[in-house]
Length: 196
Image 1 (cartoon, rainbow, N blue to C red):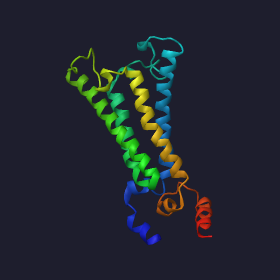
Image 2: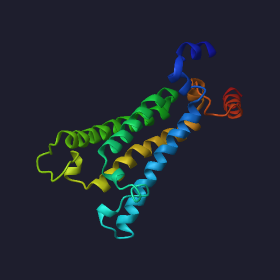
Image 3: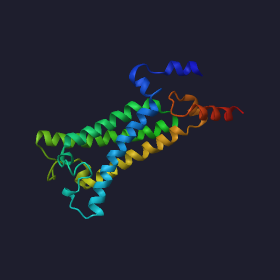
Image 4: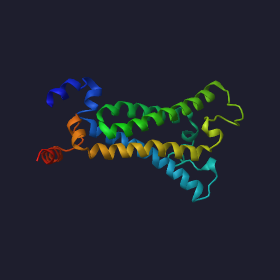
């Protein structure tokens, strides 16, 4: 078993991220994701619960720094950070968890394309046909706040499923895991129960 694991281990930073440091990097990444989620949820609360007009509903950080909400560079930057994080952390997942993580990666890739389109419109000064301002493709039919809540949900839900499955692997997945996300005691108990 250890010979097979050694032959598939990746050297360098990506290897370290997906083996010895997978749990730490994964939790740091999730902290960033949750902070971003909180911003969108506060903005939705400001619009639907407090009745604020959309331009005034700027989330937590957007209140003292209004330019954050309108900065396409910031939105694109977050989309690319999400995409890179999903990509870099993917090798640490196995089995069912890897499938769900890959679903989140694929959806985030599309979300990134939408933000790239918004950024290009702002930088190059063009608009999509029928758009009053910079707009993503789906935003032509779904308002931006709702669309971003949707995108964040359809990326976040498969990430949560992946993390749940990753921390509760079946015996086959546990044998394939190269990271330390599952505590050693739990590994011994799970493997012992599969042998006995």
